[in-house]
Image (tube, rainbow, N blue to C red; front, side, top):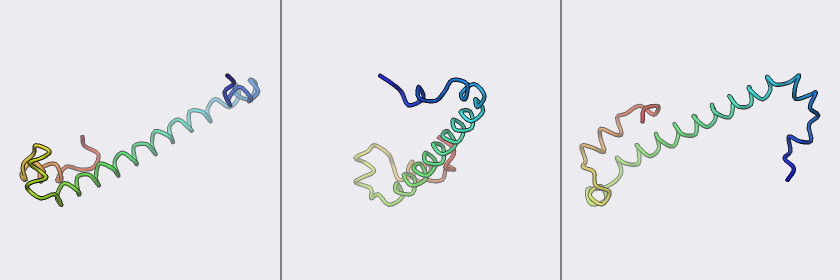
Length: 75
């Protein structure tokens, strides 16, 4: 199976290694932004659940409030 990077000349890859590093870092950064956005949305959604729904997932209203208060970057 041929990978798309196999079509790039090896001398170009050797002289442009830094571009791969930049792309990797940008990809990781965008991935973190997406994760943080999803985490914040899920925590806001916890506050909208009623007591029956919270019982169904096994957490109390206080647990949901504590989770929702966490900053988006914290697990």
